[in-house]
Image (spheres, rainbow, N blue to C red):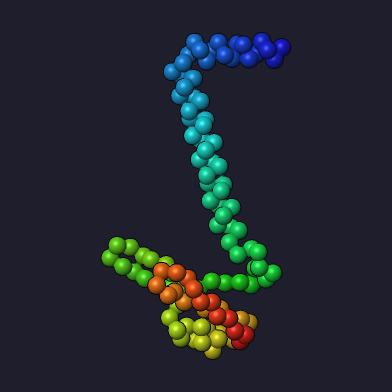
Length: 112
């Protein structure tokens, strides 16, 4: 029975080649787009989930508005970690990232 269905399906694909090509390529593009969206969403939602206290972990970014567009970086200027500790006493720990040249090098952490 299955062999008959496959034979009939193959004959229809061979008989209507243009229509079959459009349908098969549309299905392939749709599946590829869904997989790509799934992978991007999974990557974005899995950010920093390996930490023990992941729900209490936050990331502060620096937003630079330029002529070419908006740029977000993780590095902060020197006084930002101290200001966070002073202004927000509910913060338990602060870790500061500093960029030296183009490499992300120094990470310093301290208790509040």
